[in-house]
Image (cartoon, rainbow, N blue to C red):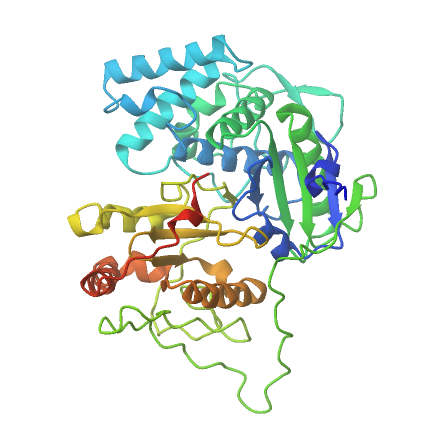
Length: 462
C-alpha cells in the first residue's frame, strides 16, 4: 500500500505576499505553531496598534522588529558571543564581524554594523533602547537622513517626497533613534528581516498579524498598506488573522481548517444570575512531601467579566496595585536552550537560578516529543532527569483556548510522570525568590525520593 505524504499547510500560502487567513481560529493557529515546526518559516507574531496613517504603522512595525533584533543579539552575528562588553575593541570587533557577514550575504554592511554596535551596547547596559513616543505627526514619523533625501510616500504608492525633521518628536526619542534614522526605512526593513531569519535559523520570515477588534476603515487601510510595503521591501510574507479587514478587498484570502491536534476550548459560560465577578484564584501551592505525584500550580480562571489582574485574568486587583507591563508587540519564536529574549520574566528567573548549583540540569524552551502521532510540547523550563516542568505564563494564557489547552497538556504531562509548576509573569517579576524557593523544594523532594524520568528518549532540541 502506498501512502501519499501531505505537504505542510503553510507551503500552500503564497510567498512574498499579504494574505488574510479565514476559517481558522487565531488562538488555534498560534498553538499549532508552538513549538515552531522544523521546516516552517520563522513566524513572528505581531499585534499592531491602531492608527490611520500608513507611515505610522510602518514606523511601529520597524521599531518592533528593531527591538526584537537587538534582543536576539548575538545569535544573528556569528562570533559575537565572545565579545565581553561595549569597549572600543569590542565595538570594533562587532562591526568587523558584521562587515564580514555582509560580504558573504545580501546584508547591507553599514546597517548591519550599526545594528551590531547598538545591540552590543544595549546588552551591556542591560536595558532596551528608548521606545517610540505614543504620538505621531499628522503624516506619521518619517525616516530622517540629516533632514534630506527621498522616501516612499505610503499614501500615494509609487511616489516619493522629500523628508524634513519632524517638529513634534521629543528630544529624548530623537537622541535614541539617531543610529536607526541614518538608514532609509527600506534598508531597515530588508536588513531586519534577514537578521531575524538568521536569529531563528530559518530561511524565510512570516509576520503573523493578529488584527484586534474595533479597527476603523482608516486603520484597516493603513495596516494593509504598511503590510504590503513591508512585504515588498522586507521580502517576507504577512498573514492576517483575527478580526477580518472588511474594507480592504485587494488582499488574497486563504481558507484554512482549524488544526486537528489543538484542544478545543469549552463553550463560554452564560451570564451569571447575580454576581458576575469571578472569585480571585488561589496562589499556586506545592507539597514537597509528595514529589512523585503530578503537582500543578493553581490554574488561573478563564477570562470573564470584571477587572483584569496583573497576570491577565478576570479578577479584581488590590486597590492601588499597579497594572501589568505591556507584553511586546512582536513575539519571536524562542531558541531552544535559552530563556525567551523578549520575556522579562524568563530572563529574571534564569538570572535567579544561575546563582544556585542545585538548579543545574535545566533546559529552557525544550521541545518534548512524547508520541509520534501527537503534537509536541514546548516546555518553558524543564529538568529532564527529575521530570520537573516549570511554566511561566503571560496574559495570553488567560484566553479561553490557551487555558483549555494548558489544562489538557498539564494532565498529559502528569500521566507521563512529570510534576508541573505554573507561575505568572507577575509572580516571577515581583517575588522571584519565592518562585525559586518553590522550585528548589519540589526539585529537592524529587531528588531525595529518587525520582528519575525514564522517558528522556522523547526529548528533542530544536
